[in-house]
Length: 208
Length: 208
View 1: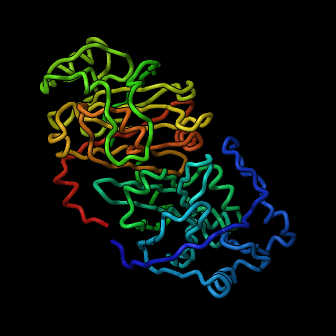
View 2: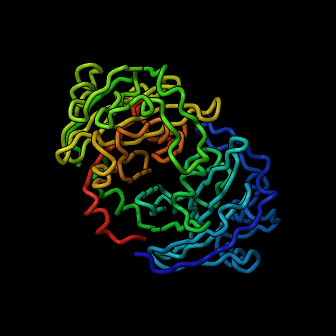
């Protein structure tokens, strides 16, 4: 069960990945301007969606960049709880945390966004700070639990080499409308239980 | 694990509960014209959202009415899989099944509806064919599992004495956007795993 609880304050994200199309109809990932700028395939643009950051560097130094430049906290442990505060803030708003687990670091992005004007929704996804091939080895679970309701989302994390905006515009993540977010919130804060497992555990379970 | 699989064809629902407000902002249930017409508190209007049905009767005969008049199938077993076919049909469309379990009958309603014009979503909820007090004794779980993704929703079922339109317009149910519904569908069909437990089991689990 949860090993740690942390409060984390949101920040605005006015300038992220503005060139990515927002259509959710396409099955393929829309292009992301971050990636177009990467010529050396070993170099990763800053994956932090909070700021328009010109930094790029090797995967190995992404974590220290996120900690030092963007002051993003790291939570440790197999199962943690991330408490996103001030859920009432207007869209667009991002909540970001790093999660260190099983020898890797993951980035949780919770985004409040108006896909349909006047109807903000919350989107939560987890990305591995690593390659897509490495990401395929893991399964992440996000869990909300309050007011006799429980919502669990399990999926393979994406790699930070992919664009978080594409994942959210595709809707391939945990999606919450405002009323559900309110039901799961306590005094304006949303507690998200996070667990990471290796995919071997996941695929050993019987498929429905 | 699932004890039975059934295909069930959808039907249109052109005339259901049209007077109920669709605002999702209110925390309380909006009034439903079905209920206003019930003077004898022992009498239940037909809870089937597929048709505008003038029938009303005692709770004990709702199941036989749904079977005989509306030809709604009953699935038996603690854990079942409901296969909703033809997910591509235009909104509004309802998929309905009864589930017999733990000595009671439950009604699953899956609805495709355009809450935001041009953006159909899927809403799934489970109702007890019984009173709200009886419904509080149970927990239902809906589970989707495909393409390395899993989505689980757990909640207390509502009573058929409440209006299904209110539950869906409040968004207090499993909500799927079109892209997620496609990811979880196989050849246009969505398999929904359904399990019912008594609430004692649920509340004995540790809260997050």
